[in-house]
Every structure is written in structure tokens, then in C-alpha cells.
Image (cartoon, rainbow, N blue to C red; front, top):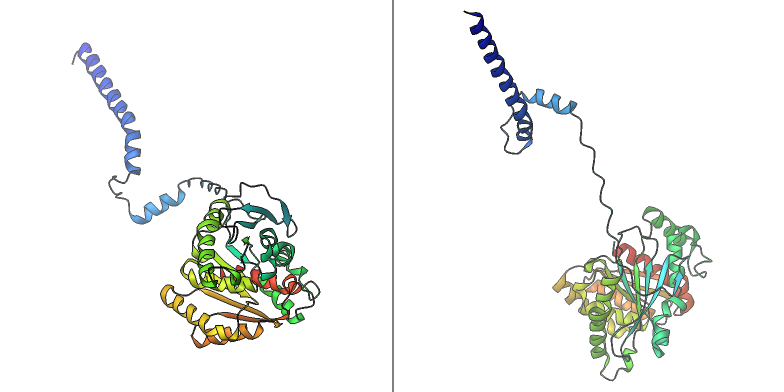
Length: 353
């Protein structure tokens, strides 16, 4: 081989080798990408070898969870704060017949985390406050001690026989503190609409209840769900009331059983003669729409104790599951400022969780 031939051969070999190396470098990134795609050919390494390689490979940094979106809050300005500043009070004027309802006080928790939502309780007032829409809408706040009951439940150590107006035993106080230590009171949005005097309605009690129920579900409830941090769905919606309001809450509950999670009454203005009719109504509602929570709360000197106890017996007779509590105290506002409001709120907190 001549010197010229040897030099040409060496140059040819060097050029070919460089081209081959360049091809490898250009194809390498594509090869890595293909290996990570779902269409890549399966590895021929033994499973235990792949496991060792996977174990030594650096893990990807965990991505931070996105912050939850804020829950809705009323556009209206809060008029005052209750329950040790844990509830904002909003006063709403709403569309409706003034003789039926067009106003509600709405209590919204201030202690919620960003994005947190809570159950909704609609609380109906008694007969004495039907004289004026403002008096009725503010009854649970100004007369019935709802804010104080909420504050006690948020701070169980404050619950005592004295704080409940001496209308509770030491045993009940200990029971309340124990259950709240096990499962703290989470709180809820509470709507307190004006409740009309159903018994004086020109259209009759049943027709007035029909119209009032429609107003609650078609006017008040949509706004509450749009503007307050309430959980969606019937399982998280409760209705309750005292005296006339208890009668009304039973009527609303029987009519909209499928759209509620819990129905309660406090010293409901029902007679012994009506108990069977109420129980039959709830039996039909349960048969049509399934199980819901039901609560009957009366007291030792309640003017309607006999009717509430008859309702308890009738519900048992018709196999309608329910909770019944006989508290201590008369049928008056001091009872509500003592155990009444607190017991109502605690029961719904458990029922609507």
C-alpha cells in the first residue's frame, strides 16, 4: 500500500467514525423520550434489576396541592357579630308577601378555613314574635340566646349548670363536654326567617304552610346556597323551630322530606290529638323518600309536653326512627337561652355532618 493510499484510507475511516458518533448523539434524546412513553417497548431487564434501578432513581419533587377556592360569602355588610365574634349577622330583605315572609337574619361563621363549607340550619321562631317581621327575624338572636348557645358549643369548658340557667344536671353538663371533646362542634350557617302566624292565615293553616314552605325553598334557600359557605345537597340541610316554629318545622319537614337531611322541633305547639296525624305523615314521607333524621325536644314544664310525648309514642308506633329528649325547664325564653338553643344546635351538628 502506498503512502497516499494509506493517508486516504485513514481519512475515510476517521470521517466515517465521526459521522457514526454524531448520529448516536442526535438520536440519544429521542431514545430517552421513547423509553418514557406508553408506546415504548418493554424492558428486557429482569424485574428485580428494574426494581433496583427504580429504587435508586431520584424521585420527582411532590407538587404543592392547589389552595381551595374561597367559599361564597354574603355580599351584604354584616350588621354585628355574635358568639365571641365567631358569627357575622346579616339582615336580608327578600322577595315575598309581607304577610307571609320577606325577611331573614342570616348567621355566617367567621371561624372557617379557606374553602370550608358547613351545614345549613333554618330556624323558625315562636308565636309571640309574629307581630312584626323584624321582631321575628331577630328572635333567635335577641330573645332565644342562639349566639350564646353557639359560643358554648365552640368552647365546651364554658358549659355549666349556671351557664344553662340551672336547667341542666351536672350529669348532662358532663355528657355535653365529653361528646364535644370527642367530636368538636364544627359550626353551621343559620338562617332565621320571619315565620307568619299560620293559625290566623286567611287561607287556612295547611295552605299557609304550603305557601311558606315554597317561599323557604324557592326564595330563601337559593340565595343561601349562592351567597353563604354551605354544603350542597339535602343531607346537609336541616329545619327546626320552637313552639309555633316547631309546628311549622314539622309541616315543612313532612312536605320536603326528600330535600332535607334533618327535621327537628323544640317544644312544638302540637296537641296529643294531632300526634297520630303527624306520625302518619312522616311514615308516608319515609316510605316515599327514605330515611332522614328527626328530633323531638321538650322539657319538664313545657306547656306542650304532653303533645310532644304523644308524638314520640306515635312515631315509635309507626316505626319512624327519631331522637327524643326531655330537658329541664318551662316553655319560655329563659329555657331557650339555657339548654334549648344549645341542644338544638348540637343535635343538628351531629345529624348534618
